[in-house]
Image 1: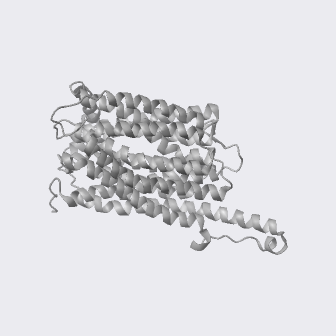
Image 2: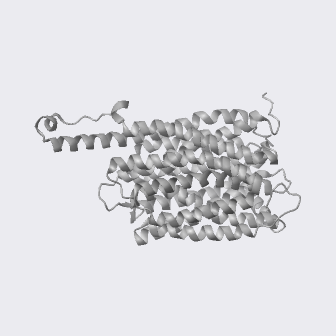
Image 3: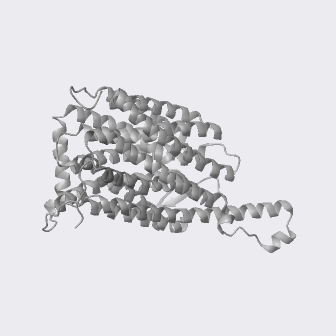
Length: 465
């Protein structure tokens, strides 16, 4: 029987962080870049409307509502599953389950079509719930495997590995999409057009053939994401400890134990003012950060004045690459800033930058402005996620029940996302413009900053406020 590695072990920490390498390809290719472009390509007319669930939805509003619903399901499932995981002492099994559900969902997106919208949205749902569901258990490992003084750096290392791995796969998929003929996708046109058509007709036919091949390449890209995610996660699963099973049947009391634990954590927050106020601030600013990350490419696809479809596809993917590359630097700088100035002060500064970016985004029209904004988004994106996670971990009281506390953290994050996405989608659906929807995020960042100022200092703490 394989002996578990000791807490703080370099091999154990690296194996934990490596899961970011495995699963971050989902957020980059599916959530952030290629899928939004692919989804937009399914709509031929300028008026992008899709019929589903008995209503006519603006295309971006529909996918935003579905995303919000998925996060609502995750927020309900998390405490249920965490209660079972605590009982059987094997949260790695649940992490595996969600990983495989997400990977299979990504592969299923190969067949996404408006003609089979419900099955298609189910695959999208599986990918999203698989990614976020696995993070519930992945994040809860952090205080179990790392000492407090290690947590900032290993959290940042995980995000950095995720950015590097996801960029590598995205570059490959970018080649598939931009140069489909080189990779064997059919870009031929009918002989009758080639022989009798005018130069303009031939050029148009070639462009249509290339666009069709690029869409097919996007479908293949979804498959590569699912395979990458499942295969590279195996190293993490092999190294991470699984815990000790308690045996016995999983009863109703065991299933509901997760909700009882959340209620207990909620009660304990009343006695821990610093953690309570930090969670309130996190709830607000995370709502805005996650909403931006989930809708950024849809915004760029719809609101930016691109010269043509080719420039749009290339430009959107390049902007995401810029975000990922800069985010590696951002995660590193934020980690170092937190060591010098303290976690809370650093989070306040990062949120101020986010707030200003929301204001700037309302006026962004040209591709060059979009690229510049993407660069600044990357600078603060990785940093705020890594620092928010490690700050929460350090604020926890002395406890062996880290899963319950991180389940509470994840539920708070998901409910925030649900609220943010529903508000965003509703404004988008009613006004017909994502620019109007982006303005409300400015207000939430401002509110989050004010709440961070209310997080009290604590003497002799490893957290500098």
